Image (cartoon, rainbow, N blue to C red; front, side, top):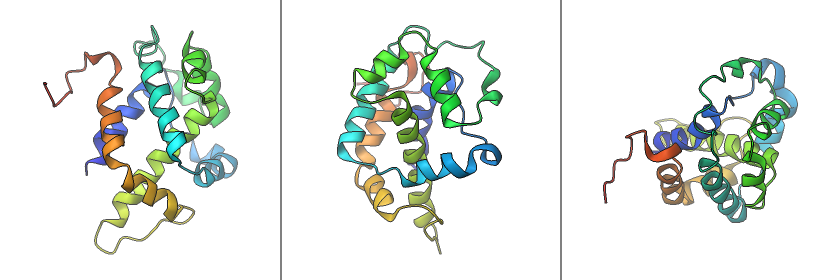
Length: 166
């Protein structure tokens, strides 16, 4: 399950600043629809990769250890507000050509489609309802780029998780 390590690294930045997946009971309709209908593109991936790299270098973004209020984040709007509350985070994302909202939605779409790609590879696997086959195909086509993205965005290089010591 190679996508786990990529997505874990991608998600590490968001979690380190107190972001969490939207609570399904609260944000199910609008937020789930927004993530499910988001179209993954080459341009979006390029911008997301640059935004993630920029965000990883924002002072304090990876060390917000006192931010335990992620249980209060129940919608994409709240996650975006939390992300934007980290000094420099919004500018880091915008300098890559994305809004903070698009960054969050792209991240969750990538995770959703990564899980769907994995599910389809299991015996008897079927495309989950509401998941775009085109997005799953995009995810599969860009596995190598996403794996590289996961390696590059490990917050601060002090996690010791880098498997490749050049």
